[in-house]
Structures are given as structure tokens and as C-alpha cells.
Image 1 (tube, rainbow, N blue to C red):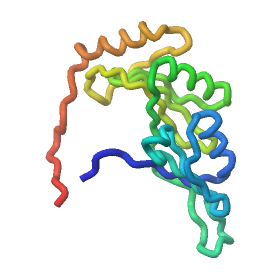
Image 2: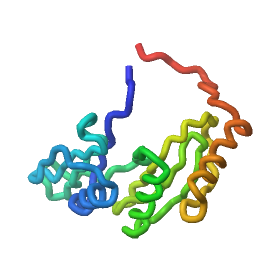
Image 3: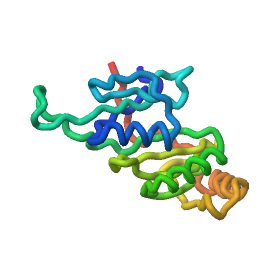
Image 4: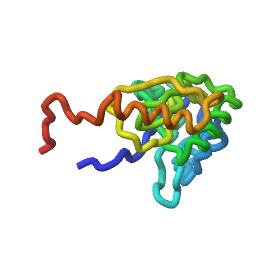
Length: 176
């Protein structure tokens, strides 16, 4: 039985550019690396998790094993931050680095910034609020003009109006 997401792996067109972004801007630590294979493993918490993200260089058509296409179909890679202040700080670094911001929202259960890395993979950074709000929920927030208190009060307000988690609505098959 699955208990947690282990990691996400993405194929890069420019491995060194992506490695730089995820270490310098996102603050991940390289835990293992194979320069000859242009691959590395990165962790936000290397003491507890070897890697949450793996990067690998794409292969061209002339590679002996044939081409390896760029990763397709990854909806997003999501990273948790420890506080609203950490979310603001990382949001500022992402903007300073010139990344394209998709949206900045509260989901009630979290406050999230969605943006795109140097190769257009969608990334989410989020702070878990601890509030209980049924999901598919999203409302815009403004990290530049609203205080942490205002954003968290706004997020908490949806516990009453949007309702608690609902669980499965359709039959769920068991894995045998």
C-alpha cells in the first residue's frame, strides 16, 4: 500500500540550468549526483528524505540508446514551506529570478504560489494552514499587499462556508 509520495523525476533540456534553479532559487540540496550521466537527486530535508526531486538530462536522437523525450504530463511538482513568511520569501526569490507566476491562492487548507521553472514545468510552493476546507477550492490572495493575519483569516473563513472534507463520491476499487 502506498503511504507517501516518494519523489518526482523530470527530464531536462538544460540539466545545469535546472540544477542551478532548484538549488539556488528553491534552496534544495543535492544529495547525490552523476555528472557523467547529467543526473542528480535533490532534497528539501536531506536528513530525513534522500530526494524529493530527481533531474535527468534529455538525450538527443544521436544517443546510442535513442532519444529520451522531455517529461510530459506532469501536472505540477509541489513543495511544502514551513511558514507564511517562508512562502513570502520564496515568492520574492521566484519573482526576482524572473519566473512566470501562474497564480497565488488560498485553498483554505493551504496558501499556494504556482509558477513555472526554467523549462516550463508547473511548480507549487505551499504553506499548510491546518484548516479544514473541502477541495477543489481556490481564491486569490495577495502576498505583496495582505498581511499573514489577513490571508490566514480569509483562508479560515472558508471552513464554515465551503464545508469539511467529503471523502470519495464514487466507488473505489481495492488493490489486491
